[in-house]
Length: 67
Image 1 (cartoon, rainbow, N blue to C red):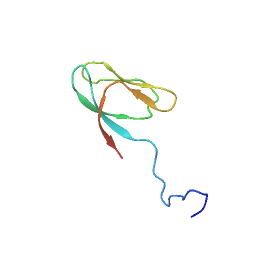
Image 2: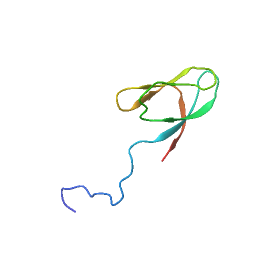
Image 3: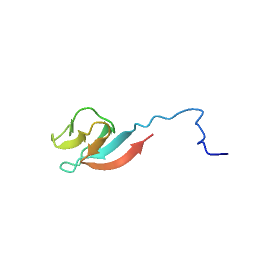
Image 4: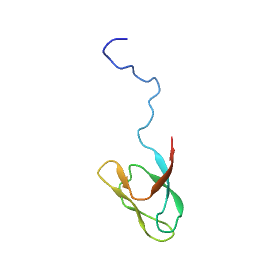
């Protein structure tokens, strides 16, 4: 091939949805891995994720990453 990396014919997005489980009440919910605002648990209000200017710092347990 050479020095250059091969380009993808169909580019895939770098962002993903995450299925997370709240550490406090064990509620499962979907969040975006590049959220622009803080994410709280819908049941108990516990902080689940904080935005860090691009990616999100997830405070809960990640169960699944959806492509």
